[in-house]
Amino acid sequence: MAALASSLLQSSLQIRTSDSSFGSLFPSTIHRIAPSFNLKCSRLHSLFSLDGGPRRILSLKSVSVNVYADPASASPSVVDEYQAKSELLASLKVKLLTAVSGLNRGLAADEDDLQKADEAAKEIEAVGGPVDLSVDLDKLQGRWKLIYSSAFSSRTLGGSRPGPPTGRLLPITLGQVFQRIDIISKDFDNIVELELGAPWPLPPAEVTATLAHKFEIIGSAKIKIIFEKTTVKTTGNLSQLPPLEVPRIPDALRPPSNTGSGEFEVTYLDNDIRITRGDRGELRVFVIS
Image 1 (spheres, rainbow, N blue to C red):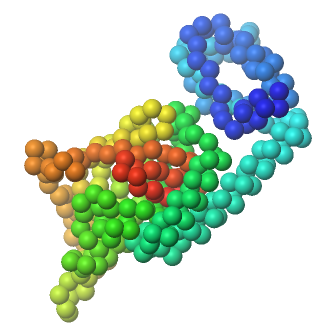
Image 2 (cartoon, helix red, strand yellow; image 1 turned 180 degrees about the vertical axis):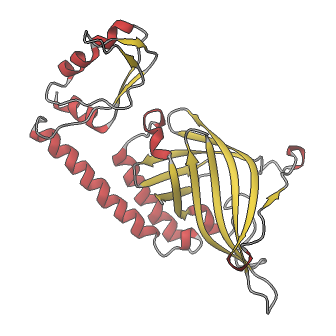
Image 3 (cartoon, rainbow, N blue to C red; image 1 turned 120 degrees about the vertical axis):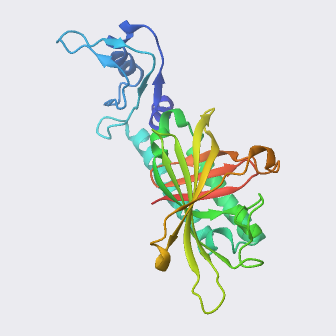
């Protein structure tokens, strides 16, 4: 029973049924499964009869029930195990953030840095367990700040894909990088702040490039993004200029390595940090902004 209770703590219990009568039965059923828990239900996608009689689900295709432990009613061993896991994850997140700090989002990373970051990420992934976006999709919502990408160690903005070089042939300085995700509209925007060098005595131009995508979930933890457009907006001294939409390259003229879409897997996700691994092996670490 302790092992089952622990598994309920670590993940959400999802029930799928088409039998409307199950709506009046599932609370007592789950109490029999885990009697030591004071159960609370959230994100219950259903309609209930509230006429004072037994609660029945009138229309139901899928019911998602999040199971939480009430420390006052859970057994001490289960609470201790849950707290130990939370404390371990907290320490591993600090270890990962320490490993990637000072690497300029990966642009300054050498082989040793890449290995340390990868090992720290793998430790979190192992303790956190598999990600299920059908349950935790809402955690994707928001604006995420990129703090590390192993692909940037190639010193190009495209990482392992073709992209403009930084600090070599072109005077481009990479600023902050964000991902803005809207789970309702399925918008997935990569936002990149850049500083473009100019001939002396002109000051460098500061711009923000927004690469707009749509996204879809593939399987339990993989995300596919489809490119739509790029918009460039000047900031700083030139902020009064209107945004410029960069024309999309026709698909027939795109190189095979730049199809306008990509896939990556979310390997760890909570309310503060997100770890992903790309379709070319790129490790990326984001924190909520």
